Image (cartoon, rainbow, N blue to C red; front, side, top):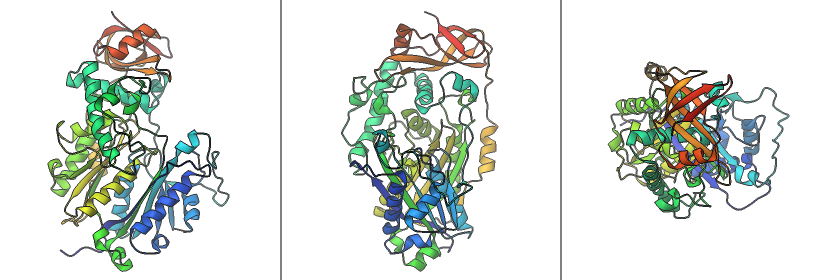
Length: 500
């Protein structure tokens, strides 16, 4: 087949995992190192000077006034466009779709996607530039790409629902109810799920945490593996204290040919889709499902003629086990499917460098496809609380029908037409627990119970439980799904007292 000049291709990938301490390490320095590695991976010299558009993914710390400008200056380049992203683990995959669209439309022919963190260094209280790098040459700040809505509403925030470690356990308990597992059985199942991720990380030289762990090591509550938000132990949580960066170089086929980049290094984005689930968690009808992932997956496969069983390599976003399971279920991947659900080891073992994990997953996917040109792959990304979703398909052979982008507006309209649920702002009376978690401190002591429940009229409520250690211990280890009780409001916060 004749390849269209505007076919988007990934031609370079760079990944950095910096384990050795370095007091001078900064996020921008790491990201620049990854960008140079991605340029070198193209197999020719001088790639960076051809970059027309640069996007730096959101950096959690420090707060750079203009990170894209800092990165461009560190690389010694002056691209015509410089973008930044809001917080969102979906953004690495989202950007591949964004740039593929623009390259296919002939709007540009060379782009750089790059991101990273130096949080391991910074959390040790070391590292240069902890208070930020002042860019005196920039005034208005970077141009933003992506959805920057606030992730939680006031009702959620009042009850302690404003961090991933507080919200993803709610999805997990809802999944447990869907499966019909008791708490002990389910925790063992989570250990088995994440043992598969750990096995991939053990074999990945770029993974941050490579020690072999059994399912029991992951599931068992110990002094080294405390509960964070029940039912999750520490080894089930994304590890954010990493010094990692990754970068991708994308071009048009015509540009790659003109620069003399070996076509055997090209990896083809086939199609991408993105959508959001109902934005606030408390308004979602089913807390164990992601309609957005289901619709995105279906539309991707319709656009390409592939099916999920045809995919050779998968990387499902893995900030917490619930994210993996909700994607697996939405995409109709069987629980006993023999394919690994990650190419890196996932965020708990490979490492979760802020908003940039997906860039690592895509870089690792490129390596797999280059080694097996007839292979294909799927990568998924998640932003906030199963809120923003981006999915992409990749292959070592050019797509017969060209690059395909699923219509985002049409897709989102289908999701938005689905059911929601009414929230009772100041509930009073009888209710039942729909899902729940118990937050623990660093000494593994329970400190807060968080409940999403239903009143007898079907409305949902958010509440905290009494701060009774015996109750919170029972909620950590025993069955409280569908437990009846009484809820009341003091005008600011709701309190749910379980029966029995």
